[in-house]
Length: 180
Image (cartoon, rainbow, N blue to C red):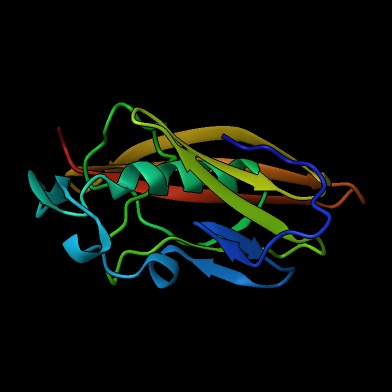
């Protein structure tokens, strides 16, 4: 979920809300740290060595995928990410991310001249990550290709960012899925 608008004077940090100035980088792992019981994390599903199991902080990938898509659709630079090793059908095919500590991480950069307010919210059944900034980038997913990569399937998702000054930037993101 992506929402964009103008932000006059955003708070620096408040209950998960993060202000991302122009040129700055945001790392989920640096912000959240290790997921522990002491920090309020509980056991949930994880993929470990290609198998579904449970661990403290499992389920964090729901946030990672939501944040990844907010950054993708919001036109932000995604510097570091990793897809799940097994495709999970509730996530957009080829356009998702997983987290663990200390790696893999999800890192974005605000490579624009406008600040961004990262505002995650949640209910018992959903999570939303809203990015608030000055609207100046049009973003579209322009295609997707998949093919074999040894025993796995590699999915490449293409994105086009068109800036208000007419500049166009094309990039792509890779996911590598083990066989079901």
